[in-house]
Amino acid sequence: MSPINVSSSPVFNRDASGYDILRRGLIPCFDAFYGTALDLIDDWWQADKLRVLDLGAGTGLFSAMLLARHPDAQIHLVDASEKMLEQARQRFDGNPAVTYAVADMADAELGGPWDLIISALAIHHLEDAAKKHLFGGIRGALSEGGMFVNAEQVLGHDSEVEARYARIWLQQVKTLGISEAEIAKAHERMSHDRCSSLEIQLQWMRDTGLSHVDCSFKAWRFAVLSGRR
Image (cartoon, rainbow, N blue to C red; front, side, top):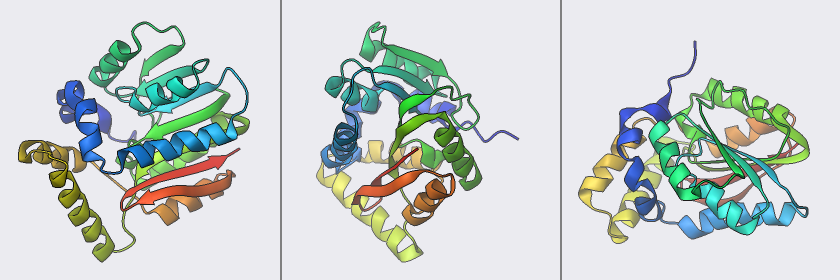
């Protein structure tokens, strides 16, 4: 049985048009979170014509940041929400280097080989078994030496830590001026989350045969995980 297609849920289609505007406020560590992922890629990649697959790409925010640093990159965006990809198409405005596919990343054909596979705040929607399966597919779709970078939300390793994550996040987004109405919408989207701990995801990545597995950034529930084939 295929996993539930969370990204095509009505709440994700409903919120697509305003998603990017709120992203910075709903991710209190926004600059360091995405910045670390991009710095990690910059430190690793020293050639031209980077071939990139963006899984759960949404509006293309992460890919746009990557393309700003690597303008010769060829990027393929995959997302289950047509509305999210409509926003991505508007963002990239016909750029021939960017292509799109409406598909559930959990069972999509990943193609490849890709030099780089990225994902941001998407894989946590999958159940654990589907995450493990996807990590294996990602390893298989990477070129030799290729990298996987996942900017993600992770689960606290016990209930006390998880409660702390939730409490700190709420304090931070309120300080950043996010309205109660938008916090309620965020909580509705978060009801679809199936987060897993940092430790177990790093182990699953190692189990697929990925090497150089690491967490290069973590601020409460936000973390940047990576590995190489």
